[in-house]
Length: 212
Ligand code: GDP
Image (cartoon, rainbow, N blue to C red; front, side, top):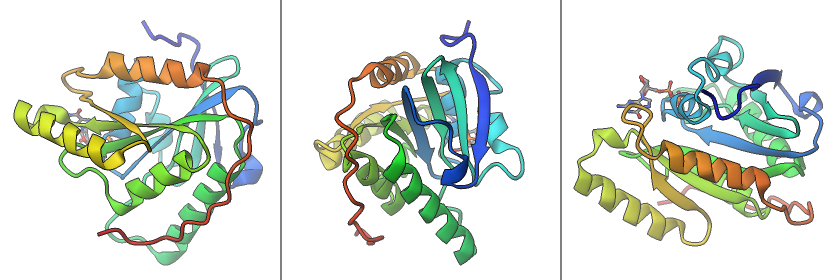
């Protein structure tokens, strides 16, 4: 049984003009392409087909809104980190993300899905900073942890938590073994219920800097 039995696809947005009405609370999911974001969303919401909607041709570069319950939304942000992306597509993605993080006062939290074997890329950091910079809760799912040994998983989690510091929390996750699914559901629920600070989005001053 889904924890959100009436979940439904609302719309895909190509630009800020198409975003859903900005009320209630929403939690966004972001991640590199192939990080396991769709599998994580499906496992957490317990709907096998939910994030497939965002994967249909033509929708992968859009912001996809789902209603979990009245006034509560999940937002599937377009993946990033494709090996070869035309500059125009990358620019579109950056503008879309700036518009999204700069405008949504209902944004309660961000889940960043990272392949546990390759966490914290430059763009992962950019996502964390965009959300944390405006006072949003940020939580990192270290996905595919079934592919790591216990020691590797433990060490990765320790290192990622240390690097994130106050900016975000983090956990191990596997859509295959089910590890961390309940924990992630708890975080999602808490984010949606969290009282948001006055919606004063800080200006996005961070340039697209490269990190070491
Ligand atoms: P997305 O592009 O970020 O939405 O990633 P997908 O959810 O489509 O997953 C990308 C690939 O990783 C697929 O082949 C999945 O089957 C695989 N995958 C996703 N989650 C897991 C996981 O928890 N464990 C393992 N072993 N593979 C996974």
